[in-house]
Image 1 (cartoon, helix red, strand yellow):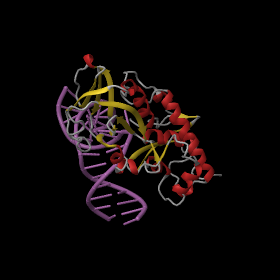
Image 2: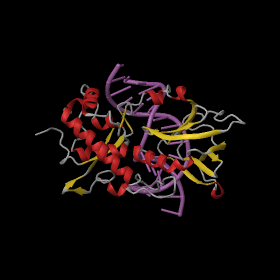
Image 3: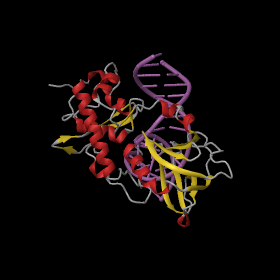
Image 4: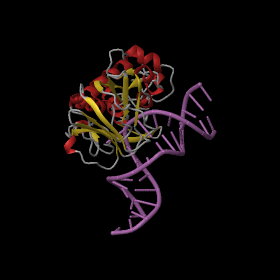
Length: 275
DNA sequence: CAATGAACCTGGTTGC
DNA sequence: TGCAACCAGGTTCATT
């Protein structure tokens, strides 16, 4: 579930720990997608969390010692932030960070597709997972010309292109379907089939859908919970995702599989060719 | 080189 | 009810 709106909701929920000092870090599961760096904090060092921000689906905790902790939630990862005296270890709690202000930040991930990394800032910014990211989905630099230039020779389906983090950073499988529906563009179109105008529409829809989802506090399939325990409710705004067989404006919603991922769309409202 | 499928891992849901 | 098969928010790697 963690796509851009959920990650954004998460980092907003984490702001209370900015300017607190890290007391301890406990690693219960050494290896997620890859091993968590063991020397994530040297002993006897007083390190403050200076800033928490997002890049694509990455969560970045900038520290006072010129290091950054990076977290990726993968498919099933989530963070919860609670008062230290309320802490009870749950299944799949892999990483626990405590602060001098009694905060307890827990990284929980059932499937372990997420990761936690840490290093000097410049070192982190040279990591592949960082360098390869394209324009921020909500960034000012994401415009019609950028997208058109990137995809105008591509035979890849636009649905897949939206999932490509090296082109646009932040969109995932749910919002890709929702964005294409909003833009009235078929997921089956190839990159090179899109006009500049359609690229523009796609970007407008991207920003609109993601912003709406953020203001709804993220979505939830099953039990996505933001850091303070409140439940995001953007899922009630889904128009097509998981709605195959249902109708919208009298037109049937279909589910197809593209590149091994489910795509939901309305063939009658998302034309393949412009008429 | 691009495109596709499998792999990583666990748990919930579906169908027989 | 039991159990196997399938599916899930993401990304990377190996194979065509």
